[in-house]
Length: 152
Image 1 (spheres, rainbow, N blue to C red):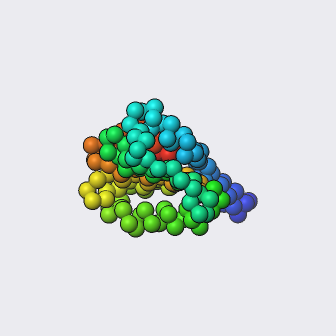
Image 2: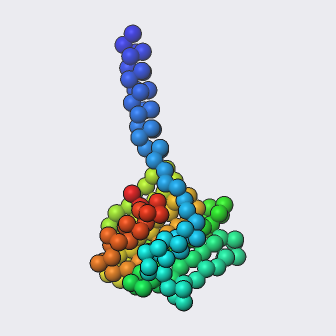
Image 3: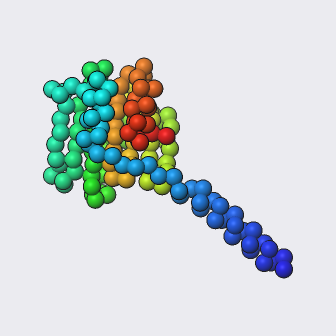
Protein backbone atom coordinates (compact mmCIF):
# COMPACT_ATOMS: atom_id res chain seq x y z
CA UNK A 1 0.00 0.00 0.00
CA UNK A 2 2.86 2.38 0.80
CA UNK A 3 4.41 1.75 -2.63
CA UNK A 4 1.15 2.62 -4.38
CA UNK A 5 0.77 5.79 -2.31
CA UNK A 6 4.37 6.87 -3.07
CA UNK A 7 3.80 6.21 -6.79
CA UNK A 8 0.56 8.18 -6.73
CA UNK A 9 2.17 11.15 -4.94
CA UNK A 10 5.12 11.11 -7.37
CA UNK A 11 2.79 10.96 -10.40
CA UNK A 12 0.67 13.88 -9.14
CA UNK A 13 3.81 15.93 -8.43
CA UNK A 14 5.21 15.29 -11.93
CA UNK A 15 1.91 16.23 -13.58
CA UNK A 16 1.74 19.42 -11.54
CA UNK A 17 5.21 20.44 -12.73
CA UNK A 18 4.35 19.68 -16.36
CA UNK A 19 1.12 21.67 -16.22
CA UNK A 20 2.83 24.66 -14.61
CA UNK A 21 5.59 24.82 -17.23
CA UNK A 22 3.93 24.30 -20.56
CA UNK A 23 0.56 25.99 -20.66
CA UNK A 24 1.20 29.70 -21.04
CA UNK A 25 1.11 30.96 -24.61
CA UNK A 26 1.06 34.28 -26.43
CA UNK A 27 -0.73 34.88 -29.72
CA UNK A 28 1.32 35.94 -32.73
CA UNK A 29 0.21 39.01 -34.66
CA UNK A 30 0.88 40.33 -38.18
CA UNK A 31 3.07 43.06 -39.63
CA UNK A 32 -0.05 45.08 -40.48
CA UNK A 33 -1.18 45.11 -36.85
CA UNK A 34 2.25 46.38 -35.76
CA UNK A 35 2.14 49.21 -38.31
CA UNK A 36 -1.45 50.08 -37.37
CA UNK A 37 -0.52 50.22 -33.66
CA UNK A 38 2.37 52.62 -34.40
CA UNK A 39 -0.01 54.80 -36.43
CA UNK A 40 -2.55 54.71 -33.61
CA UNK A 41 0.14 55.92 -31.20
CA UNK A 42 0.99 58.74 -33.63
CA UNK A 43 4.66 57.76 -33.93
CA UNK A 44 4.72 56.03 -37.33
CA UNK A 45 6.82 57.74 -40.01
CA UNK A 46 6.00 56.54 -43.54
CA UNK A 47 9.30 57.79 -45.01
CA UNK A 48 11.36 56.03 -42.32
CA UNK A 49 9.57 52.71 -42.61
CA UNK A 50 9.98 49.69 -44.82
CA UNK A 51 7.71 46.81 -45.68
CA UNK A 52 9.11 43.97 -47.71
CA UNK A 53 8.95 40.29 -48.39
CA UNK A 54 12.18 38.38 -47.84
CA UNK A 55 13.36 35.69 -50.34
CA UNK A 56 12.10 33.00 -47.94
CA UNK A 57 8.59 34.51 -48.08
CA UNK A 58 8.84 36.09 -44.65
CA UNK A 59 7.05 39.43 -44.27
CA UNK A 60 9.10 42.19 -42.62
CA UNK A 61 8.31 45.74 -41.51
CA UNK A 62 10.49 48.18 -39.64
CA UNK A 63 11.83 51.67 -39.41
CA UNK A 64 12.34 54.63 -37.11
CA UNK A 65 9.49 56.31 -35.23
CA UNK A 66 9.01 60.01 -34.45
CA UNK A 67 10.39 59.37 -30.95
CA UNK A 68 13.49 57.58 -32.35
CA UNK A 69 12.54 53.98 -31.70
CA UNK A 70 14.21 51.60 -34.13
CA UNK A 71 11.80 48.72 -34.66
CA UNK A 72 11.35 45.66 -36.80
CA UNK A 73 8.79 42.92 -36.98
CA UNK A 74 9.21 39.79 -39.04
CA UNK A 75 6.75 36.98 -39.69
CA UNK A 76 8.63 33.90 -40.86
CA UNK A 77 5.45 31.86 -41.51
CA UNK A 78 6.57 28.19 -41.44
CA UNK A 79 10.32 28.91 -41.62
CA UNK A 80 11.46 27.75 -38.16
CA UNK A 81 15.13 27.77 -39.16
CA UNK A 82 14.98 31.32 -40.54
CA UNK A 83 13.27 32.57 -37.40
CA UNK A 84 15.85 30.82 -35.20
CA UNK A 85 18.69 32.41 -37.18
CA UNK A 86 17.16 35.90 -36.98
CA UNK A 87 16.52 35.62 -33.24
CA UNK A 88 20.05 34.34 -32.61
CA UNK A 89 21.43 37.10 -34.86
CA UNK A 90 19.64 39.78 -32.85
CA UNK A 91 20.96 38.27 -29.63
CA UNK A 92 24.53 38.06 -30.96
CA UNK A 93 24.75 41.36 -32.83
CA UNK A 94 22.71 43.92 -30.91
CA UNK A 95 22.32 42.72 -27.32
CA UNK A 96 25.39 43.53 -25.25
CA UNK A 97 23.80 42.69 -21.89
CA UNK A 98 20.69 40.64 -21.11
CA UNK A 99 18.68 42.07 -18.21
CA UNK A 100 15.88 39.50 -18.29
CA UNK A 101 14.61 36.56 -20.31
CA UNK A 102 11.09 35.17 -20.00
CA UNK A 103 10.10 31.92 -21.70
CA UNK A 104 6.72 30.33 -22.27
CA UNK A 105 5.58 27.40 -24.35
CA UNK A 106 5.63 29.42 -27.61
CA UNK A 107 7.53 32.60 -26.77
CA UNK A 108 10.77 34.14 -25.56
CA UNK A 109 10.99 37.75 -24.35
CA UNK A 110 14.43 39.27 -23.88
CA UNK A 111 15.13 42.71 -22.43
CA UNK A 112 18.62 44.08 -22.43
CA UNK A 113 21.06 46.76 -23.43
CA UNK A 114 22.83 47.53 -26.67
CA UNK A 115 25.22 50.47 -26.92
CA UNK A 116 23.68 51.68 -23.65
CA UNK A 117 20.13 51.73 -25.02
CA UNK A 118 17.12 49.59 -24.09
CA UNK A 119 16.33 46.63 -26.34
CA UNK A 120 13.25 44.42 -26.33
CA UNK A 121 13.19 41.28 -28.47
CA UNK A 122 10.06 39.18 -28.33
CA UNK A 123 9.63 35.98 -30.29
CA UNK A 124 6.15 34.46 -30.48
CA UNK A 125 5.89 31.33 -32.61
CA UNK A 126 7.70 32.25 -35.84
CA UNK A 127 7.42 36.02 -35.45
CA UNK A 128 9.90 38.43 -33.91
CA UNK A 129 9.29 41.96 -32.61
CA UNK A 130 12.44 43.97 -31.90
CA UNK A 131 12.47 47.54 -30.53
CA UNK A 132 15.57 49.56 -29.64
CA UNK A 133 15.47 53.02 -28.04
CA UNK A 134 16.74 55.21 -25.25
CA UNK A 135 16.21 53.83 -21.74
CA UNK A 136 13.72 56.64 -21.13
CA UNK A 137 11.25 54.80 -23.43
CA UNK A 138 11.47 51.44 -21.65
CA UNK A 139 7.97 51.60 -20.14
CA UNK A 140 6.43 52.94 -23.38
CA UNK A 141 8.01 50.10 -25.36
CA UNK A 142 6.80 47.53 -22.85
CA UNK A 143 3.26 48.96 -23.11
CA UNK A 144 3.47 48.88 -26.93
CA UNK A 145 4.64 45.25 -26.91
CA UNK A 146 2.03 44.30 -24.33
CA UNK A 147 -0.74 45.85 -26.49
CA UNK A 148 0.48 43.68 -29.36
CA UNK A 149 0.58 40.60 -27.13
CA UNK A 150 4.37 40.42 -27.17
CA UNK A 151 5.13 41.25 -23.53
CA UNK A 152 4.08 39.77 -20.19
